[in-house]
Length: 335
Image 1: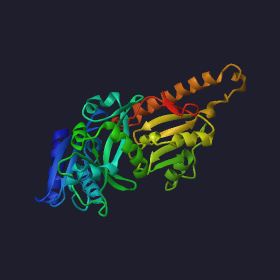
Image 2: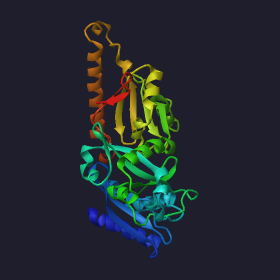
Image 3: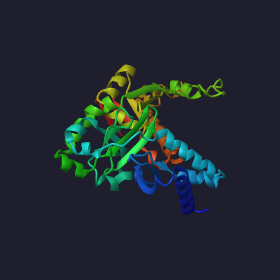
Image 4: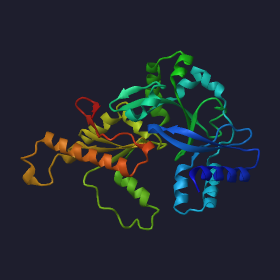
């Protein structure tokens, strides 16, 4: 079965399951890093927003022997678990006074998103770009209105479902504001609406293993302390590195500069630079200056990030191939 036939088979199976009153829509969706995915949405009468379910990986599973009936069942289950209770009204989005408290930022790769960036307000930040969303909760108590005219990204998360509207240049003209105004609002709103979580990697691993029968077999300890920084939704959490004084306070707490590893758009890993200050072999201590040690550590960490991006991450989740450096002295992030 070809991919085109597979998509139409899925669509027809869901149409038969949900009935003629429901609209099953397939569309090409531009995702992060210029990634195109085939999204399926289920629109029911009286509700004009729906989670988008992507079919690309399901086709790979089908090619590897998974029955198509199982795939259809899983898609129906995902929709039922994440469908919103009712519509939302886009009219509120035309009112800047109602929108301004919901404007947040996120980080994406600059080079990989050049086409998108021609149409959205943004700021260059190292090899990244800061772009802006309007954040909408889609829990029944939070939503009273709908997005029939705007492009919505709707995603289930650990803390409940949320939807975002990417802010484009024409929105600024409509609201009569500048991108500097956007940035000022996002700097205030994002930490409040998407609280950061900074956790020791060992605690994260213990939690992941807690429900595993093999949890008694623990991985060897990491050669250096490592921390995971994201937000409470686990979506676009890499932007937490922009939160005012977050890195400054953490670096002061550790009494160290920081390496920042862009593990994905959703999180970063933080390693204290002083973890590498003492060579494992004392005979090398006189040969390697602190600057040499930092450069070597930076190269090794960058190689690790690049390998993970190439072998473990989906293209749309990649943030950068470069490791960043936070300096306590300058309170700045550099590459």
